[in-house]
Amino acid sequence: NTIDDESELLDKGGVFALIGPTGVGKTTTTAKLAARVVMKHGASRLGLITTDAYRIGGHEQLRIYGKILGVMVHAVKDEVDLKIALEELKGKHTILIDTVGVNQRDEMVTRQIAMLAGAGNHIKRLLCINATSTGETLMDVVNAYRGKGLAGCIMTKLDEAATIGSALDVIVREKLRLYYVANGQRVPEDLHVANRKMLVHHAFKLRKSPAGRHFQFRDEDLPLLMAHATRTSAKELSLG
Image 1: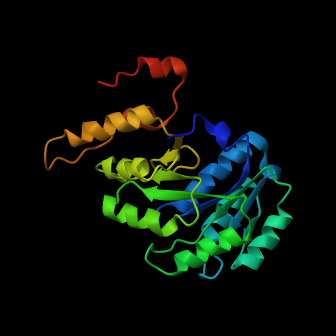
Image 2: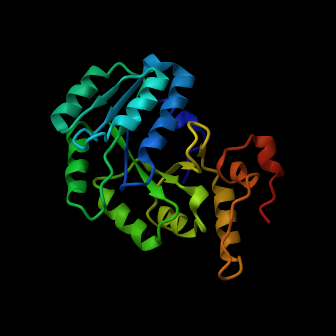
């Protein structure tokens, strides 16, 4: 289940919290989404919040991106702070919340989910899923972060993945809605609306590759795999 186009997020707007374990790319992905919102609606329509206020230097990366985009970043440490920040930003078209990375087996995950839920049921949680992780690890992540329900997910680190089968299997099995896929560090270029046909095609293609041979994405394959091509271009793609 994927979104048809970026209007699901960019046009409708709302409050989105990116959640997930440490090192999955939440801050960079937040910056990519932020840049898209600014390009579409302007810096004045975007609100940025980070919950990584307790760790020394934890919010600096997002502050740097915010400065480049001309958007102030609000750092919060608990539910009270988050409610205050959301109240201050309530006139914004889109609010993005970059959450602190927490190991899925850490009890802090429960507190983080409770904080987001306590701040209002209007917050849509997007789980960042690492394409390089094993299926077992990803199931742990989903079960830990699910809470009362996820709005969807974003698959990250496709450029580092030798296979995407495990990630796709978990997404399908858990009926998660896939919003975007990310394949690099460039902001905002390396973020694409998911093309489900090409994702499935490449997942099967990888399974058929010779044992012991690591698959490498070709540069020309990445846009086809991940971006929503134009309708004309999509018809020209052969699924094999």
